[in-house]
Length: 371
Image (cartoon, rainbow, N blue to C red; front, side):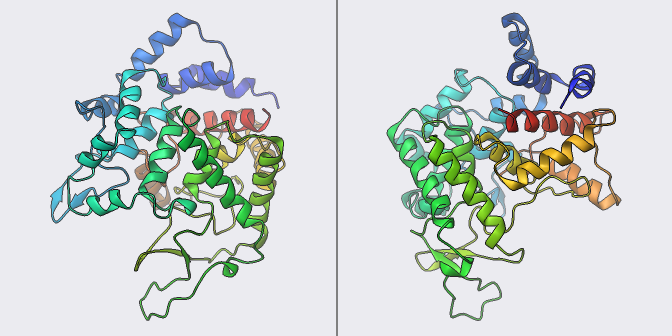
C-alpha cells in the first residue's frame, strides 16, 4: 500500500518521539545531526524528565517492578513512572538508544543481585516476591519474567545465556498450546467456594502470556524458520480453541494468581469499530514483530482493515460512540503500563495528537507485517 499520505500527515503534525521513530525505523532517513537534535527534544519531554528524576545512584529507576503503588496507606509511587517496569516501557517506546547511560545503568542494576535484593526490600511483601522470583517463569507469572522482558524491551534481550534460555522457555509456551484441544486440557478445578475460584494451572506449566510474547518480539537469537512458524501456528491455534469467556489462575504455593495477561482467549484483529484500552494494538504490533508476516490470520485481517481505513486520506481515526469511551481511552493513554497500548504523543488533547498516534501505529504495523 502507498502510505505517502499517512507519512506526509505525520511529518506535518507529530511531536519529536514519532518523528524520530518514523524517520529512523521506517523511512531510514535520519542524519546523525537530526537524530541528536530529536533525541535532545525527546529527553526534555515531561515523561522523560520524570523518569530521569527517579534514577537512583545505583542505576535502578524508581521502586519495584510491576509493584505496589501504595501499601498500608502509604503512597509509594508519586506517578506510575516511578515503577521500574513503567519506566522501562517508556524508555523502550521512546526508542532511547540502549547505549544511553540511563538505560545501560538500569540494565547493570537489574543484573546485580545485591542491588535487586536491596531494591526489593523496600516493603515487606517484596522480600518473598524477590526470593521466589523464578517460580512461575514457565508461564511468565513471576518477577524474573518481568525482569528479562524489560531487558529485551531496552535492547538487551540476546546478550546473555540466561536471556537466551528464557527465550526457549517462551517458545515452549507456544509449543504447549499446539498440543491442546481446549484450555481444560491443562487446567485444574479448585475445590473452593471462593468467588473467583477459576480453573488454574500449576506454576511449572508452560503457557504463553503477554510477557513471553514481548520477549520473543524484541529478540532475535531464538529465530529460525521452524521456530517462527511454530509461533505463527500457535497463535492461529489459540484463536481456534480458546473461548471468549475463559478464565485462568496460576497456583504458586498455596495461593492463586491472575497470570500476566495469559493468551487464554481469542486474539482480536484490528477493526475500525473496536476500541479497547487493554493490549489491543500493542499485541498486534508485537505479533507482527515476530517476523510471521501474514501467516497469522489476525495479522492478515488487520492488514486488510487498516488498508481500507487509510485509503481515503491516510489518517487513522477512532469513532467514539460515547463520552465515557473517549474518557477511558484518554485516561489509559496518560501513562505506559503493563496492560495499556502504546501512545507516543505527550498530550493527546492537542490537535491531531490522537490521530498522529494511531496513524503512526498503522504505518509501523504495516511496515512490520511486510518486513
